[in-house]
Amino acid sequence: MAEHHSRVNDVVDNHEDAEHHIVSIPLYLMVFGVLIVGTILTVLVAFIDLDHIFPGANTLVALTIALVKMTFVVLWFMHVKYSSKLIWLTALAGFFWLAIMFAFTMQDYLTRSSGVFTR
Amino acid sequence: MATHSDAHEHHYHPPGLQHQFEDMGQQQESGTLGMWMFLVQEIMFFGGMFTVYLVFRSKYPMAFAAGSNHLDVYWGAANTVVLIVSSLTMALAVHFAQLGKRNLQVILIIITMILGTVFLGVKAVEYTAKYKEGIVPITGLNQRTEKLFKESKEGTGTAQGRVGRQDPLESLNTGLGEKGGEHGEEHYTNVKGDFQWKDTSLVAIAQEGNYLTESEKIGYFNNGEISQVKFQDKVRIFFYIYFVMTGLHALHMIIGLAIMTWLLWKAWRGTFTRDYYAPVEITGLYWHFVDIVWIFLFPLLYLLGRHFGGGHG
Image (cartoon, rainbow over all chains, first blue to last red; front, side):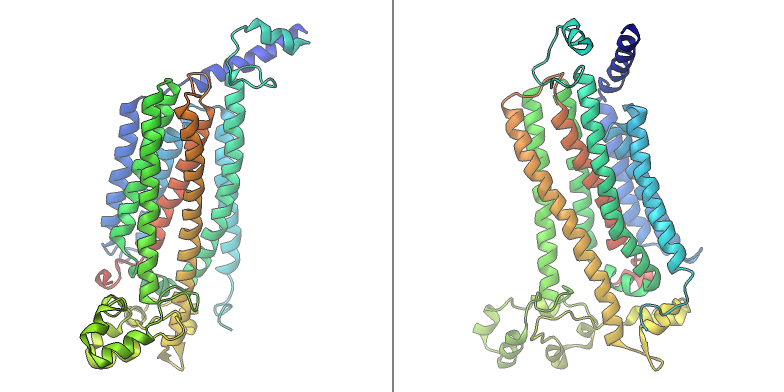
């Protein structure tokens, strides 16, 4: 009975820490600034030919900027930075399964001979 | 028995607390976790479409670039900014809900809803342009331009005033516009409202630069000649993906607006307090997720081919 009681209280204490963090308005505005700068940057870079450096460089830069923007949204707008480990794990698991889907699909398509779709 | 005595020990019992939870913190955590579980399946839902995009783009990069260059960067970028601002206002709505400030909360939810509506309005403008240009990939869902063809041949003033005027002709950037007037009109007739794509210039550029993929060498050519019909099929794939992905994204926006209508009503009645603001927080999670999807859709659909050939289009 006593053991059960203390365990419950521990869990409750955890929640108190995790849930009552209020992100300040200046911090929200800074995240917003990063997102706007990222958007402007991604448009400007798209018109410069980076594929001369190596094929796909333009797409790589665009995706890197998008990933940075996503990270800022997830951590601050979605409060994951201040959430419990369980929420962190859930969010990361989503992207992990997504990576599996991409990787396993492409290891098939990219190693097939060409013309699969046209013949 | 233990849970009962616990609940009474805390004696402060907020009105939003459901009986199966110890306190508001646990209740909120459970709701947030549940929402994240939903968002993980949403990641996989959109992920399936991103996988389709990945497979086809890796096969036909030039067809994707040609289709992408034809989308309107300005509308796309403007919509990105609109959505980011709406994400900020949603985050601030959650912020003021956490502080228990009803009025600011209500105002920010309204602003978020207005911005969401603006986004959908811009998408409607873009879709309409595609309809008039004849690049909706489904036969029959494009503007039929037979009538326009006949009337412009007659050359009467009244005819010009009627059907869609010069727009479908002038804005058509499928390659024949450059060939000029006298034969141009004939090519623009689209009796069945079919998908039409004439511009194969990017194939020629890629052939010259020697960076066609193996599947492109088969997929765009007929006996060594660039085949407009075969290339058109590949560009059509891009527009299928464009319409399905942006369409389902827009559907998510519409659902978000419906949820926010309910949220606004609750906030208006002062339901949310410092202790009970979970619905605002969870709606925020959903809205930010929809924003993230667009953060990826914008560069992948609108910007991918801009660096080819000076980004004409």
